[in-house]
Image 1 (cartoon, rainbow, N blue to C red):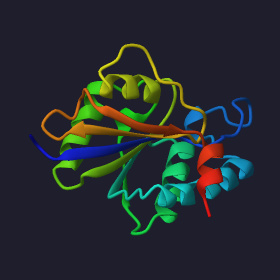
Image 2: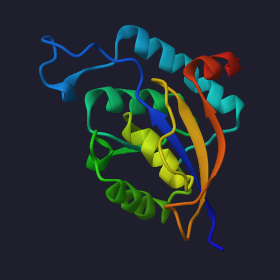
Image 3: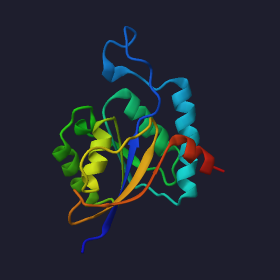
Length: 169
């Protein structure tokens, strides 16, 4: 049996509203409140003993901003790389290939993305049908076997940002 890979799926924080101010949805940033709430939830991960070696993120601004806040709040601070397949509508197979590639060097990966894709990925990693619901800023931990990172895995936890903030010191 290959080593276990810890996968942390992270939905981006609260973002600006779609509309005329952001005609290109890819450019919508986190709101100031979204930045504050997500940054305040990251210390809750430390209370859970979470260590992340590498962060993969959607290239959209709101996800990249969330990935940056996540990495900045962790010790040691993980590097971040963009993965086009984590953008809305990305191919699950391409995301699984990115996991396989990065798992060769890193056993604890965070993936920052969007709904409904993230929820569908969680279900796929768990060997389930359908989708797992993610609130904005929610994080879940799924363990998968390194030999078969596409699942089925084991759900360790799924926490809302409010629950993470409650854990923070």
